[in-house]
Image (cartoon, rainbow, N blue to C red; front, side):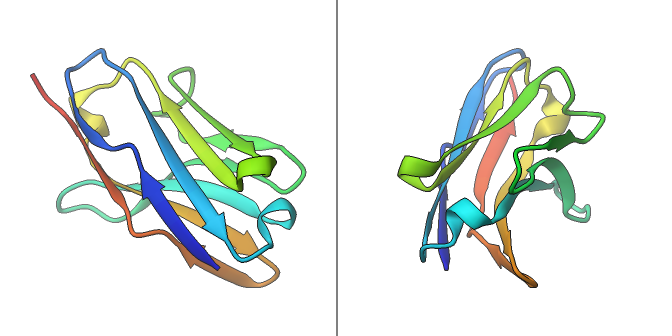
Length: 114
């Protein structure tokens, strides 16, 4: 399984971005997916998660602003981010969990700054 993340960039506070993560390997429809953020000098933390059954979970900081979704036809998981804040800055990683294994994408940098 390989994951390719994209969509990061520089955005002003209050702006929006949509991150994408496309998976290869044929297990996407049977897996759970998540987005994690690693801010400078901090540990990687969960931002949003969607189970194989479609249940979602968000970090408190992401609730009401971020939405995780997926497209089975494209083997892609998305993170729609709105009302971005400077504290949302970091490298965003996607993760796919299937069976007992986790697979990580390479990360995409989001910078929220004026």
